[in-house]
Length: 102
Image: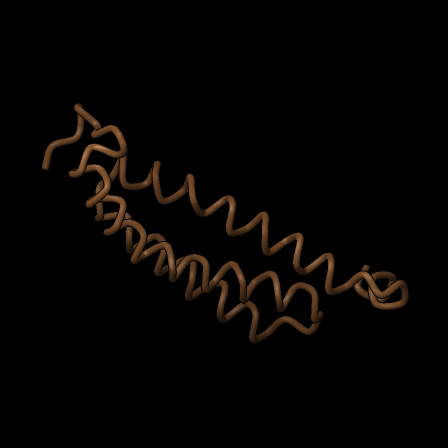
């Protein structure tokens, strides 16, 4: 697949589109994670980030290296966003989960 994308000068566009989608997916992950689990879910973002970083190092394909690296650093960014999301909930910008204690 990467060979086709490189031969047709589409690799950068494919990586850009995938990056856009990955970042777009992490936004609801942060919101739902904070809603259902509170800030305790930051560990999940850390674990996903570490796994994606390691996988990126061992991957030999440029496209997948890039996708894994973007996933890793989006996950790391999500850690901070979970704590920011808690502040947004406290301000009333997002709904608070009435079933969750704490």
